[in-house]
Length: 251
Image (tube, rainbow, N blue to C red):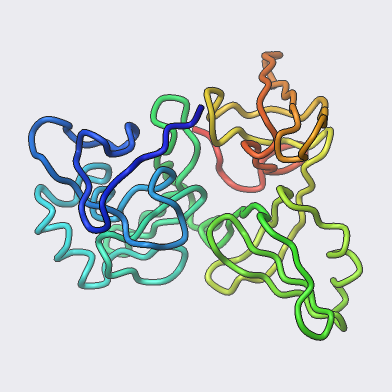
């Protein structure tokens, strides 16, 4: 059972904040509540906490807010000036002053963590398809896990291939342009990482997918390069490549 965080409309007590946030629980009463955005509260970290507590660029939230409001932190290729902005799975953070890039990846200890990446992969992002629908003029629209919408027009060369894309597959896109680079199917033989549940952070090749009722609740078995076996449900699995991940997903 995944813990769901309950909070008021504007405030969030530290005692009920997501357990993977790197904050002291008993030092103060309140903490930053994420603004409505691309990721839900229980699967994200506010940008202010990342700047202050993860990256260590500020000692207080007031200092962190000053840094962020000046446009010195870039998320997925765009400056973000809201210290409450929710940063989540696969987002890329750029700190121009130090020329450093970080990607948010699944982590067994803290669920989400930042991994420093090379500049040549900072313009790429893996995003999971959460919804597929036909819109006006027969075009296809894919809604991704971070709230993005990718439109594939009916008269494009990609349209026929896009018809085979399924929910919970993944797309490699450029950021911030959102240009589709590669489709990664969630199927047997695909390399995938678990991003939710008790096996979060497990990277392995999909051995089998057993569907009983809903596809999202299918039992997926993964095998790591070391031979370890992990089992979880399909909606907790993110495809990341074939022989190796297309971007950094593990450290």
